[in-house]
Image (cartoon, rainbow, N blue to C red; front, side, top):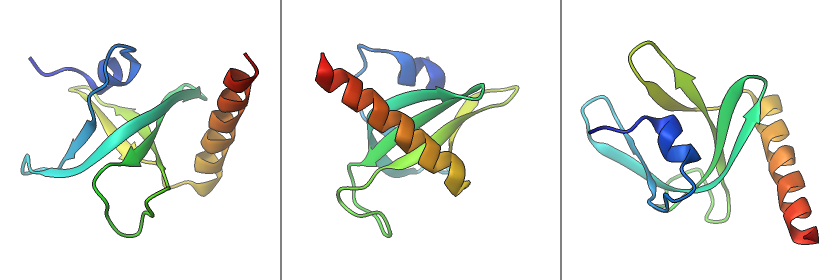
Length: 101
């Protein structure tokens, strides 16, 4: 049974990589899930590539949002740089808080 992307991202027991597929059902990229950040009624995911691809550097991550359609949910790259920066700021806040504990 196919799991919804929201269920995969929010499952604390899931340690499997996030795999993206194209329209032809071909695996395109594999990511490690770094964080899930709720922001302005959307769910965002900070994902780090496991398999390298240009132009993402080895130590970089990308911001995706969950696009919820009538038939299923999909991960989409966040192209709005202001929102992506905001998500990274929220992620850094979470990291700082966790380091204080």
